[in-house]
Amino acid sequence: MKFSVFVAPNSVKADLVATTKDEVIAELVQALVDAGEIQAKDQEDIVKAIMRREELGSTGIGRGVAVPHTKHPGVKKLIGTVGVSAAGLDFESLDGQKACLFFLLVSPPDRPGDHLRALENISRQLRDEQFCKVLSQSQTAKDILDLLKEADDQHSGN
Image (tube, rainbow, N blue to C red):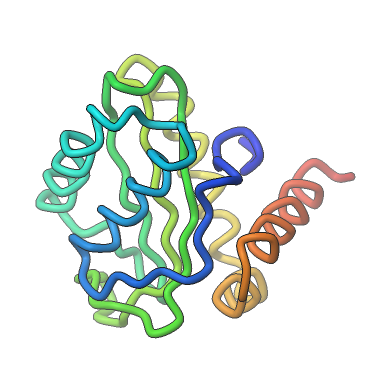
């Protein structure tokens, strides 16, 4: 599944200000609210759902990357955003390193296939060290979106 299918362009943040796990999740969910992708009335519940998912085990997968995600009835389709923290923050990652790249996903409970395909695409791209390096050095949302488009184009063979 291409990034262009689920990443809300107006929610991408190249300059996260959060310094904790709770703050970065709240900041990314707020970005989706601000982009009109999540209703404000669902915001708090979605943040809580992501935090409950984190209690099961950190989605900080290592190498500076975290993929917080949840399913929530407040969304009608899979939606996601990307954030970059130049300083990085403790996300209780599996390798103990600070996380600086964040892919946050929210999907409807009745669309598990979309959720899994998006997670597969993210994990495939994150195995590419050059992709991670360029993403972590992105200065603007446009830089991030250009990189995601390039990854989409390469994946589709264009």
